[in-house]
Image (cartoon, rainbow, N blue to C red; front, side, top):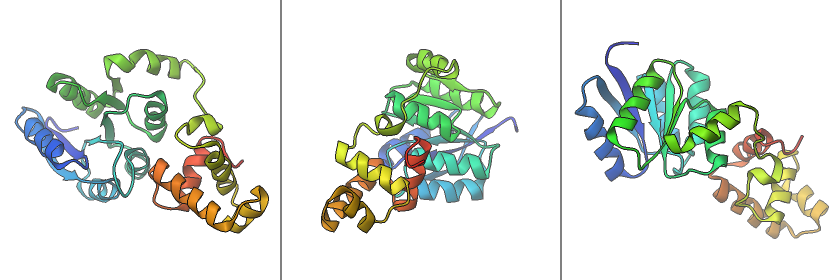
Length: 216
C-alpha cells in the first residue's frame, strides 16, 4: 500500500457524496480518486481505478451496495470496502460482511472515525463502529445469523413463498400452478420482491435467496 490511501466514494445522494469527497480530499494521507452514484457504476469504476478503499453506501439504485461489494471484492480482492450507511440492522451488517466488506460505519460517524476506518482497511484490517462491535464479535463467535424467510423480513409471507420458488428455479407459470395463483398475481409478487430486495432481475434475486439458504 502506498503512503497515500486512494479512495473511491459511492453514494446516490450527490450532496452527501460531494461533501464527503471534499472532506476526505482535504485530509493528509487520503486521495479521492473517483466517485460513483450507484452500484453498477461503482463496480465498473473500481475495476478501472483500482482504489485502495471503496467507501460504499447500501441503498442505491441499479445495484445495491451489498451486491456491488460482493462483485468488487470478488474481482479485486485487494480492494477494501468500508460500508457507510444509515442501516444498522443485523441483516444488513452481516450481509455486508459476507459480501466481503472489512469496515462498517453508520452515517453519523465523525471525520476521525471515517478516516480511522479507511486507513485501517487499507492496511488489511477490519473495523466497525463502536455501536456494532458487540454484534460483530458475536457473528465471528458463531452466533446464528438469520437465514431462510427470516433473512427477508421486509417480504410478506406470500412474497417469501414466491421467492423460495424463484430460488428453486421455477418459472412464473410453474409458481402460479403450484401456489394456485393467477399469473398476474405472481408477476406482481415477483416485481414487489425485486423492489424490496433492490435487485435488478431474477438472477440477482436468486443469488440473494440462495445466499440465505432458500431454493436448495
